[in-house]
Length: 328
Ligand code: KG4
Ligand code: ZN
Image (cartoon, rainbow, N blue to C red; front, top):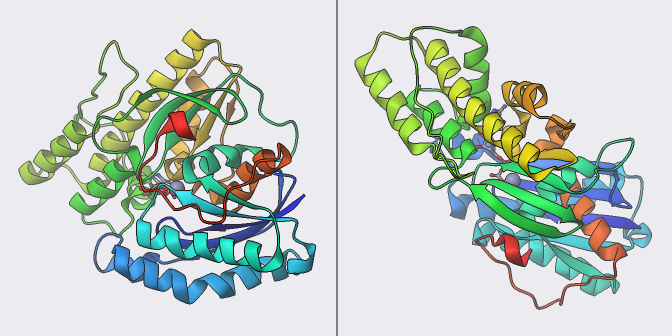
């Protein structure tokens, strides 16, 4: 089954052609980073207007790169939520319009489920269940137990900032460009261990996370002075990675998970990838970096298994902006 997938939940306009939920024949991402950089964050109204400009060219490029036309497409999928309402509406309605106009099956996909299914976009055996998923994106940090396709149980998550959000806010505190995540990671490569110890919120007895105290500690460190940017970036990244890898590996052991699946933009972080692989008692899967950050191929992958089971979405279904793992 060849699926045309569309993603526009935040600030990337993306389209992809995905075969049988496993092979991305194309994955086109038009990033709006430069547009939002001067504001230091995503401006929702600017984002949705830019999606309108980009959506059709991006879909056309995805079809052309996959060497096909709409005649070759078997179904259309679009990101339904969570995300920014104005952004979601553009891609979701484009997907619906194409499905309606061509009389094709249509499916709305949860963006976070899409991030998890980026792990299916690799050669070789597909992931096995039960799997523990660590979802670390700009808006979410969740530990989710997955007993089978489409079955999610949230066992922990952040009580305040998401991991990506913490990276972005610390990037701003350190005077680094937007989005902070990759820039903090890059600065950390120039740093190393020092006398600077930043706090880890272990939230004992839970599998929850908290990153706001760490962010405040970085603020106080920059105000006091005495450490350069690479040293602070290094200490911050180590603190985040220590808690994420520590809790994920412990929960994987307790649950008897057969694999750990990592998902979301922060999964592109090299130190996190290293440390999860070092500490987890079972194989750790992490998508290729281009499939970690927002893209439509992951939406096509998640759509692949649901469509194969006969699932369809009503054409008049609305977007949603907040996630509920029990209802994915
Ligand atoms: O999943 P994603 O592309 O968008 C959301 O659904 O939120 O995640 C974006 C987040 C941003 O906070 C970004 O700074 C972070 O992922 N990120 C990183 C890295 N690359 C992207 N954080 C740390 N290290 C990276 N290499
Ligand atoms: Zn995302």
